[in-house]
Image (cartoon, rainbow, N blue to C red):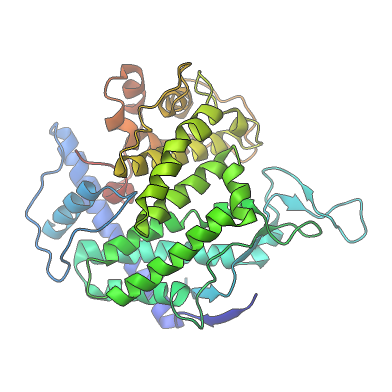
Amino acid sequence: MRALMAVTTAAVAVQAVQAFPPTLARYEASYGEARRGAAREGGRPATVALGLGSLNDQPRVFLLDLPSLAKARALVRATDTFSLPAWIALKSQAPYWWPNPRTPDGLPYVQRDGERNPEINKIIDHQSMDRMAGAVETLALTAYFGGEEKYAQKAAQLLRAWFIDPATRMNPHLQYGQGIPGITTGRGIGLIETRGLTRMVDAVGVLETTDAWTAENDRAVRDWFSRFLTWMRESKNGRDESAAKNNHGTYYDLQVASFALFVDRPEIAREVLAAARQKRIAVQIEPDGRQPLELARTRSWSYSVMNINGLTQLADLGQRVHVDLRHFATRDGRSIRGALRYLAPYAVGERTWTRQQISGWTPEELFPVLRHALYDVTEDRVLIALIHKVPPPAPADRANLTNIRVH
């Protein structure tokens, strides 16, 4: 694998990561304060008339909540240098595998769960892709909220470099994801590293409302994701990840369903989401809400939160194709709500987490998931009471714009 080019010059990169995010941060802070004011008055931020300018149609998004985006945009309108390289084939190294102390050359590597080997930072593909996805999301939202086309143009430039331009685009596969020195050049587990692209396809949906994103661009990116979706479903690595019973299986389903909706294959999304009732929820969650496969990890809290976050996002996508995962429960009570009810007391300080968590105690990891679930548990007084103990997001938290649904 080799880098073919850097997408941005240093000057343009400075604009992308230093000028643009503070602009969006002002919107986040404005809407955060508006939410607080509305809460003090016992209501929600009011809707005002939208003046769309050159941004016309509603975004076609799947994980983002459209009413929240529209209301946030209405309110905000009323009121280090890096380059982003694209790669022929994305490559990464398994983070929890280390040189073997019993062999002269350190091969084959051995696993130390939860302990990140700093060697992984020598291969920056994953980091670069995450930064690209984050930059595209930030730029698209900034264009949507502020109505300035230049932000959409920069997002479009990054997308063309990564997914369209034959000289720089990434191949639509992850054959070399999370390789292990001395064992394998890539595994199905590596697919966890493209989960951030689910946010990016929503950002493309936002860009579709701008003049910067052309029909030709749209067709080309959809073609890339269509081919990636096929690889996920048909390759050995993809099939292995689909068969994973823990969080890896959850995020595989999340990607397949999200990408299928993006490329207008709702039947694939519906099939995956319907199967998640038994394949994910019934397998992963105990009747008392525990997630044993995540509790067995050395970072048991973080992985429990990570998996329930993925399941709640699956439930979001389920709403798009009339598959109700939010209220699904097996006969013995295994459900997303049960998992939230199990975790919430630890997050708000009512119970002490005694299981292994080598990376430190971070109760705030669960806060966004609980806030998001509030409107789905209206009849569960115990869980509602726990969620109301969660502190509101900080004024500059992006959740003020994207992740709190407004009904």
